[in-house]
Length: 245
Image (cartoon, rainbow, N blue to C red; front, side, top):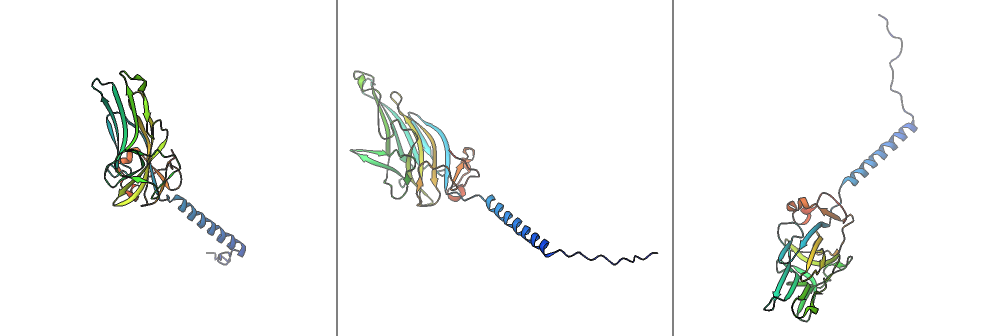
């Protein structure tokens, strides 16, 4: 048997420059991994926005559950009233009212009537706004189909002909005050008032103002209509996907 005369191989020693390069590569890879992990973590939403396309038509009451906890926070009521002995006078009335006494609506009073304000996009809705209790008128339509036909198709109120205007809302989640908004379009066809609820949102942090119409940004999540029944109040209502209007 031949015995090898070659000495056993020893592990080669890497030069200092190669060691340095490997160390730098490891540090870079580690930093990249941490960065990707940070990017993969979804930002905790503070505003939950829900798309909607809900018609509000005469003689119907539509509930609004802002935070999808299964309890109604506000109600939209659309009424059609026929008066005069012969049914010539027709009045359409659109109003919004809190479902519980503690909930409030941004509004104002004029003479003996109480109205809900039709806010523009970008308005801050928070503790400094004038919130009021009780039902609030949004728009009224009047038509006389009898002797005084010149009085037909009168549409009044802050929401008459409104396009993408916002209700400012204050409501309670587990006894704490939260702010939200609802976006609507309102028309007065003939003797009625018709409205469409096109979206709504609420702020998950108590007492923090919300911007009317804000539906984009790192602090906004969009609720999927298919999942509304499963969403709960507060932080547990964070949806799994994001979107704009």
